[in-house]
Image: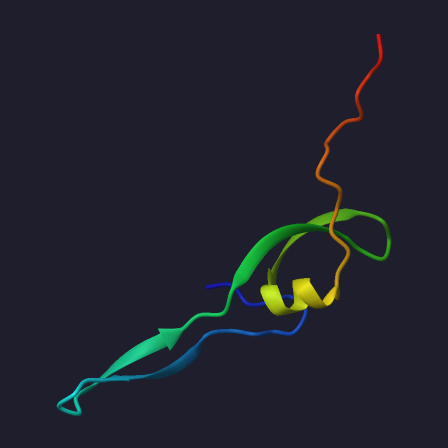
Length: 72
């Protein structure tokens, strides 16, 4: 599984505990998204980033449109 390219957040490991006390391993996954960003040089890259870093504005997303409309 991917990790956040900004903060390095990965999955956490823990246990599911049933009513009888049995423990089974589980992984708690962060909300990782694959987004296009514009880096400091102005190039567009596709990276994995967690929702917390995305919401905090730690990266600048690339524009959604691929080509501008051409008037005829």
